[in-house]
Image (cartoon, rainbow, N blue to C red):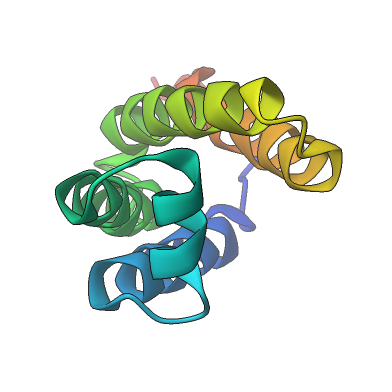
Length: 109
């Protein structure tokens, strides 16, 4: 089965990553509330942006899945530590979606 939804997943992560890189959408306040530096916010943003671009392409899908799953796990742990259940639930769902990129697709012969 061809997974045609990965470009949309990648686009979503890339946009969210760009927002974090640029400090848009209240991300500066959120990361400051967690006690994370601007550098940490930018690292998460760059990772989400790069992972999103990779997941959107068939060639880079596996690497992008690893990157997005790893960065999502770090952010999820911060959300759980701070008892932000709504954010944590959404992040968990996104992390599971990114993890599906780790499963091999159809084997071509």
